[in-house]
Image (cartoon, rainbow, N blue to C red; front, side, top):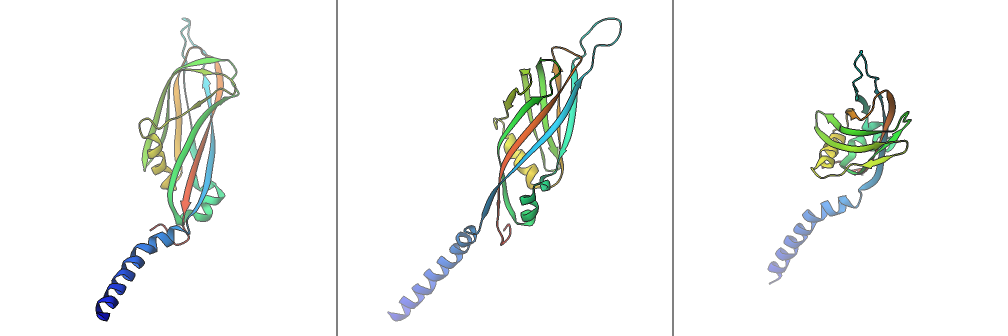
Length: 184
């Protein structure tokens, strides 16, 4: 009987220890916010030629370096997960109010691509719009950030008028989980 109790105790202890290590390790998780803002300057050129046609297309891009955040740099090799919480675009420095007839915002890297399309959005100073996760774009952006490498963001589209400029400021809010014992 004592032998059975000893064997049962060893077995239960072993099971508790093997499943408990991960639980104990997760107690050391550190969560912090990593927020980024990137500005893209856009110019919609005036119509050219003798026939007045609206040439209302624009395109602009910028780069985002995930390691530019000091907390990310501090925990760079210890990051377990990266989760995008929100994405917001704000129009700034608008020289003429207009309507974004069609627009595409794309984040690209070797790790993936996240794309949003828009139509009929008012371009005015301090006008904002939010980007949702309808098609899993945040999940793709999580992968892009998790690669911890510089990546591109591009905004292009057409407007209802020409001959003006504006800045699109993108705010990306994310939460990172890191662990001093490493990512595994």
